[in-house]
Image (cartoon, rainbow, N blue to C red; front, side, top):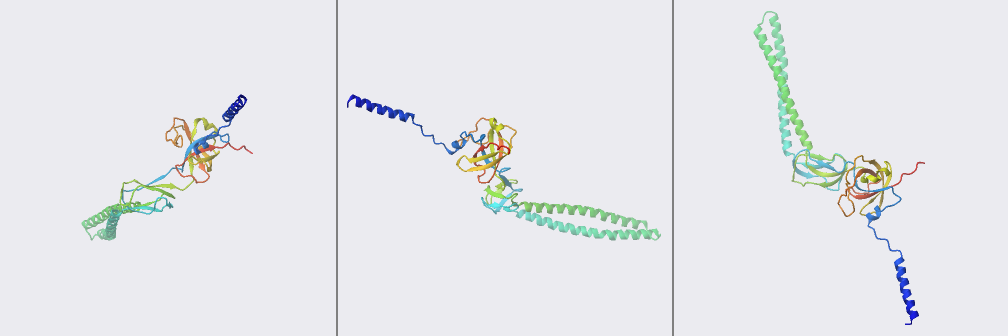
Length: 307
């Protein structure tokens, strides 16, 4: 190879190296969460959050203890308000109710018998008083009749109290029997059952979790430095941290007044809570497409200028 040809070959190699070095590099591939949270001039603020419902999941408890006799619903079932969810074994309660009703009937009969004695005792006393006034009767007979009437009236008062006590027992037994049938306090969807048929549930023990019907909300952790940029009524875009593609519309409902640590995770792959000052910002989703508990990114849009 001649010297000029060697120089030309070396220059060509050097030129190729320089072109490769100066060529624009491919942009790094971002995860959906990283791409969604990257700075964007279209948004005034970006915050992390979780999907929720107002008040959160509802824990349905049993007012009384007992064995689970049967379930009327399965996880995933939609239920209406007042629908039967489960039945607690109420055989002992039914026995107590029957006994109380029997005692109630007996007490009512005794009360009626005492009540029927009062008019006769009063009539006899009045008749003896008339006879005494005419000078033909004795004062002892009048006193005896008056004592009989007084005793009958006292027994009547006592029996009324006894009947009231038994009636209260009947009412309590009816309440306990009704409480053994667990009903849905609100309309919603069954999320999870915590007990099985045949298991014992303690008084006020949780039987199942219920997702109430209603709008879905987002609880977003709004950083201290971004609070001034967000306003109530402002529109926002909500995207899933895991997917980052589908955009869900939302509206700001409220901005918290108290600072605290973040309630949501710092990244899609970390559960470590960073040391930051945030307030809770509540947003209402336009459509209930996201699941409760789902991690999301909230991208706040600038307020539209007044027309």
